[in-house]
Image (cartoon, rainbow, N blue to C red; front, top):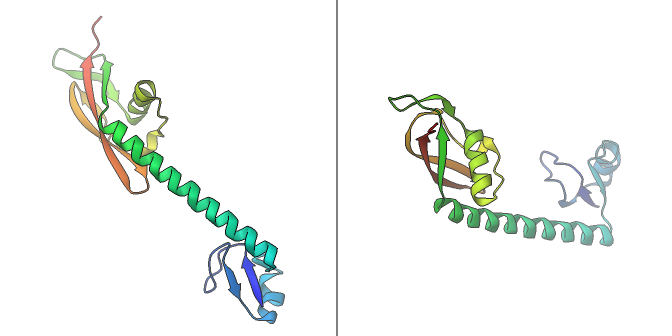
Length: 150
C-alpha cells in the first residue's frame, strides 16, 4: 500500500515522501498518529508539484544570496562613534550597528545574528566583518570606524 508521509518517520522517510508500507502498519500506527495519509494519484501529483515549487524557491533564494554576497564584497561601510583621544570608543560597534549600516547603504535587511562581530569593535580603524548569508555563503564587509567629531 502506498502512503504519503506527513511528518518525518525514522526508518521510513521524510515528510512528503511517497512510501510503500503494509496495510497493518498504515492502519495501526501511521494513520492513528497522523504521520501519513493514503496516497491517491491526485495527492501524489500535488506532493510532487509542491516539492518542485519548494526546490525552485530554494534555488532562487540561493541565487539571491550569491548576488547579495557579491554586493556586500564591494561595500565599504563607514560608522561613526564617539571616541577618546587614543582612538578607543566610548562603547562599541556591535552586529546590530553593522546590520543597520548595511540596511542604510544597500537596502539589504540582514539579521544581526548572521553578522559576526566577535569581539565587538572598540577602537577606531578598519575591520573586515564576516556576514553569514546561509546556503554555505559567507562574505566579508569592509567596515571603517571613525571618530565622531563634535
